[in-house]
View 1 (cartoon, rainbow, N blue to C red):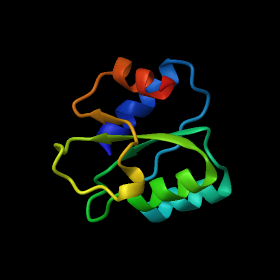
View 2: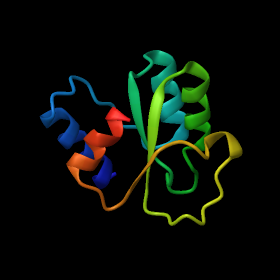
View 3: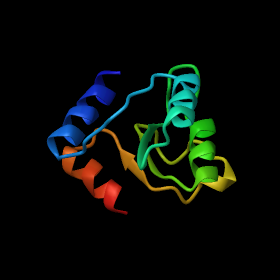
View 4: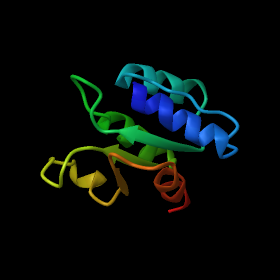
Length: 102
């Protein structure tokens, strides 16, 4: 959660008007259904779950997103998500902003 709050701070300082943080798949899916985002940063590891279900929902809605991860290349990605850009942790604010431009 600390990393998410730091990313939120970076994005707000960069001029992004609204940033929402969700700590679980359920929270993220509810936020998407309430108001779909323009773009999403998804940390793969959400404690006991992964954000893959959130990614699949975003993809089905045509919403751009990138993964942030501390995992190496050995994590098993669902085939549909193999081509999604990834930002490796630890990352800089510049790396996040660059990922949004992809």
